Amino acid sequence: MNVNQNKKVLFLTDIENGLEPILQEATNTSAENMLTIQSYGAGISHPYGEIMRSVIFAIYQEDVEEIFVVGTKDKKTSAGNELTQLETMKDKIQTLDYLFQNCKPEFFGGTVDEWLNENSSDTIEKSVDMIRHHPLVPSYVKVRGLFVHHKDGKPSIVEDPAIKTGQALPDHCLS
Image (cartoon, one colour):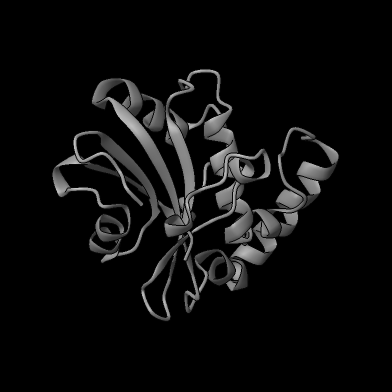
């Protein structure tokens, strides 16, 4: 990846230590031009939620020109899966599922358990798409998905809609 050394790059990452050096090397971004927003799962669940709001502020206040939504592969545990296995959570999740299915049709997922344990690849792709098509995100801002594989620490670019529309990423971006 050949990122312009002078532009700001925003990374939306999972809450995990040690990703910054890997991301700096993979994207050729200096530490002073790197901005990071961390959340569990690195996903954006709502186009007008707090994480998206932070992304938009970063674009306009920090002159961000490129955004990477960073997922992690081969992670040993899933925080959502751990939560749903707790006995106290099981009853609450069952109650919420009933309410969302029968009383609150605006819930965005199938079940609370599915929402908490969403597939990381799907989350990254949805988040990239949500940012890319958000009406407040300028068209010049590049948005990409990036996965950090834990087996060897080697990042690789996620195939995203830009590739499907004929705007292929250079070979050196795919690993």
